[in-house]
Image (cartoon, rainbow, N blue to C red; front, side, top):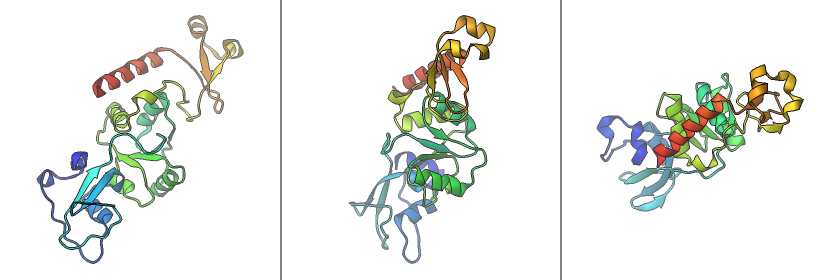
Length: 228
């Protein structure tokens, strides 16, 4: 089961699990009854033959489920639940398209993920089990930096990282801006020590390669090093 074992209690790991059920039940339903969200499930086998999550099980079936392989079948565009504001900032800082609000309802998160073909990131298994959620990942860690590492490794994003290409406030792609056109908005030391600037076309926030940029570069280097 690979990393799907993360969702199981210790007594169920590394052993055959017998699941009792009544009437017609899909593999999706039975897998989620064990606490495993369906977006985490990849290849399925039924009695040694290729199967799918929507297959209806029969009494005595031997079902194998494996995790979704690392990487991604869709463009890495995310939507994050209400508790992942800091992870959102880190992902945007890395250049990734991330939708986030602190007042999303679960239904809105699931429907937006489906409608916009986004990957839902959450630690809420029940949210990820909603039928509308096609692509998602259940974060294991509570630490936002460790969560960033999880996402980068799970979706193989190291080569797609582009630091400070997206607005941290509103998620829009940044544009280069001439220093002289924003001079009146810069602090004296910023005017003195920096010459390259970017601006968000939506909220007009200004960015430059200061200490935040340097810290992010070091963080990304460490993530790539850990992956290797």
